[in-house]
Image (tube, rainbow, N blue to C red; front, top):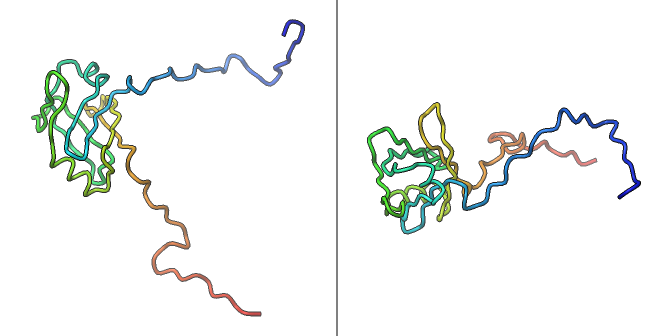
Length: 145
């Protein structure tokens, strides 16, 4: 584009921001649960957690969130070698709450709670309520003219 010049009158270069760094699928820390109850930490999460394999794991009422507390009394102990444990009761609980298995929970550290918080992507979105869908409301009657 040798001689072509472009004018950027409306661009303030001082306001430019870096885009987020590219994070590959396998680099995202997460836990997963299969239909048979295999509860696993992926390699990225094992690296982030260090030697920590014992967690108090809690779940939100809808199953959307799993929270792993490393400093509380443990109710889950992942294998030191591969980060797996079989937990059939968790698989049943998630299924009962509408979570489709296998389920993936990408986790991030929450300093305020001192816990890893995972959010499941395998849940259907909550139903939207519009004015027409509210119980007890009847659609307006149409007059024949």
